[in-house]
Length: 349
Image (cartoon, rainbow, N blue to C red; front, side):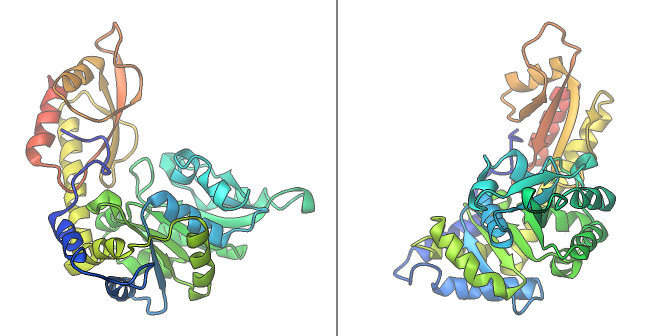
């Protein structure tokens, strides 16, 4: 019953096998390895973007901050949701790598920005001439940090607002595969066709050991990104071990298969929790992450049985067994029906 994060699950056997195979013999370093050529072709085919440039890094934070640094001048501001990972969970990394550029937070019900709210915040910046921040990129997170998912039309609408001010668009896709599995959109529809300029394409949360791809749909950005990756200490010497993971991840649609498994596990979990009759959901659970509340007594039963998840609001220790505490639960590709059902039964009591 391990629902703390999709970071915590095992590496998929096919990806582990690819790593073992990559360890046989020698290959060139720093991203000119043989597997990277295959990865570049795979990504271009997957996104129907033959001119896209593709680079690999080991963490989602690196993918986000290097992408935004490539799009942003130090005197600009990035528009994002308050719940965005770049705002909540990256320790001012974006500001550091962007050389001091700031974040401007856009009202986002259920962690999803709306076009009107975005336009209002853009209009509120670049109003003080040299004394204030200038308008910079728009960063969208899909799946959001509250488990909700932007549709293609919603991303397109936000991009349309951004483009009306000549601003680039970054998509934080740490759980991009889960968003696609939810919407049944194609990769191209959810990215460059919807106005996205740069994608942080996640693998670590979806069965890889540690690899993320940065997909630059505008190839003119490639050289600057390469320089920033090196200068930022994120260019791997034994790069082939990143390439091997991403190649296996994309082979025969494994990445979407794993995302569908994770989404299905979360759907089963949420259906079971709803059936208990005593659970309240904080947000609509669109993909593989859910936020819900139930009694302290139920949480205590789960913890005593060894369940792993995060208490989102409230304290496990308390005198009132009926007080509601809320939880964040995330399913990964390896979650089993048995573990999901056991978790639900313990909530039910």
